[in-house]
Image 1: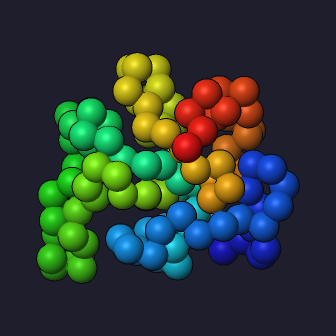
Image 2: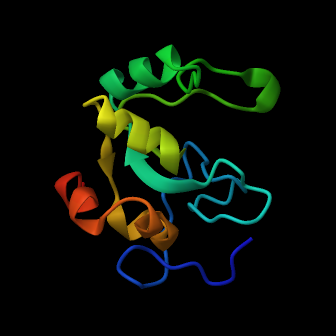
Amino acid sequence: MEKSPLNVFGKEIEPCSLKPLTGFYRDGCCTTGVDDVGLHTVCIVATEEFLEFSKKVGNDLSTPRPEHLFDGVKPGDRWCLCMMRWVEAYQAGCAPDVVLEATNKSVLETIPFEVLLEYKK
């Protein structure tokens, strides 16, 4: 896991969500590390349109999975999303809003800051 992760503004990253509890490490933050191959680094605000898109492309975030202590993501929930899934949704025209203060600075290696600003929540 990253030490003192920073957000896209270069400041200490803020929590994305504690309810539902999110993050690859389930610490509420979009922190990442070598074992996070999906790079769960973009803090989003889920929409119905995005959740449907994600389900169609094979990542069903909305269906509860009690066996994994997962209640499912609902519209309006904040969630640490895989960076490339956000890019995929962006290219499909259904990218959800982004909470920049809770989004990991590492996304800037792939997503231009100007693009993120268009989706600022």
